[in-house]
Picture 1 (cartoon, rainbow, N blue to C red):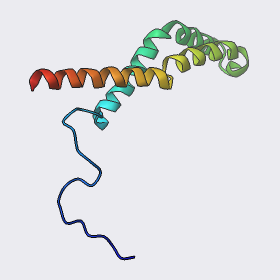
Picture 2 (picture 1 turned 30 degrees about the vertical axis):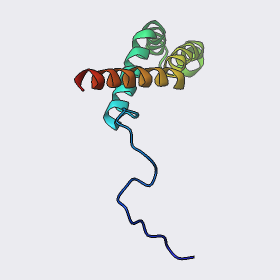
Picture 3 (picture 1 turned 90 degrees about the vertical axis):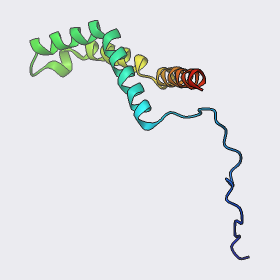
Picture 4 (picture 1 turned 45 degrees about the vertical axis):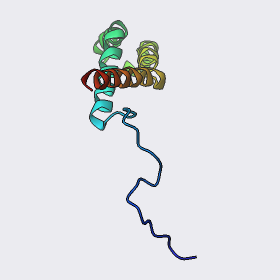
Length: 104
């Protein structure tokens, strides 16, 4: 019924391995930036089309450029999906592990 007192200073959640298993917050943010840069580069034509259309139609941009907006958004959504982010994170984690193995 009372509180249990931990008598040893060991990790109560199990053995901690020396293997790298997570990215730091800065590394995750770098993955987000890389993902965004790759998406913008890949969808450059679609973005340019929408921007040109929006320059031509100031007030009616939402009606006249809707199809180009959808095309641009579909391109950006496919390039910035969760799967793409996970691929980047796994690649960064693999590089981090291999870098740790070569330095150790």
